[in-house]
Length: 115
Image (cartoon, rainbow, N blue to C red; front, top):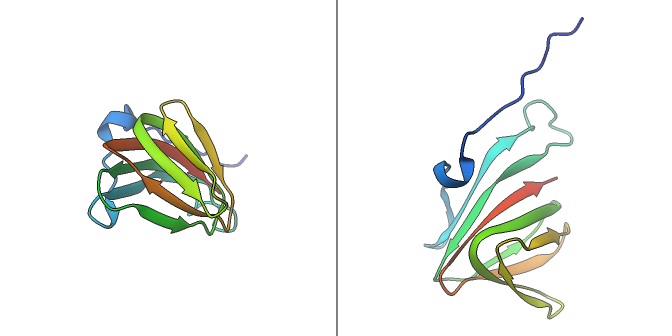
């Protein structure tokens, strides 16, 4: 019988996990968990993205991502001209290859899952 594989748990991650600065002076992102060490060919990662008022973040996805807005608000646009004011509870799919611009008039916090 194979050894059991334990699940991972991060209590109250939305309020306790602090993602690192990734771009500009105001864009923070970090994986809470990733399966990359167990499955490097098809990893799944999840974590938090926080943007504070300031420089817009323009990002081209090299993977698929789902994002749910948890707090605050974002203005999210793409190269097709589509633009959304996103608030808590909104869910997005950003396909591989999409270039997305994120801005906020105050701050926004989102949870993501990337494949």
